[in-house]
Image (tube, rainbow, N blue to C red):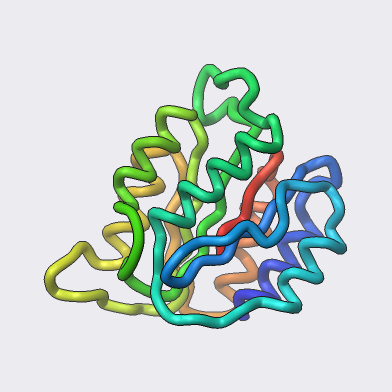
Length: 174
């Protein structure tokens, strides 16, 4: 469902928007640096590795590094709303590895990069940590992004279409 929705997002995002692709399990990897070539991102989606672990903080930090490497933040934007960069973070579970998501959110806020977060499903998380919905909501709030939870394929498609309509250069962390 996530891959299908991401492909729909690619179809509705503005052609001039550079889109990158970062995957994360127990760490994070840039699969495609921000580009306007939708085929490169689609090929990476078709070859999506599956692993264990959820390193949300690492995903954000890696996405920020990819955005900076693309030159999208050559000049610090006045605000998150006027930023030419966005991070879309899609996850199905609680943070279980890597750096702190809230520290990563603080760095994104410094760079004025909003994070749009999507929780797929209803993972309650672990009792000793913030729930996935609390973590993702905090990431979005701290960076002037938006948090949403999707429990169906149709919900997820709508989320991607909504975000695609407002996309500028964007890095997608899945």
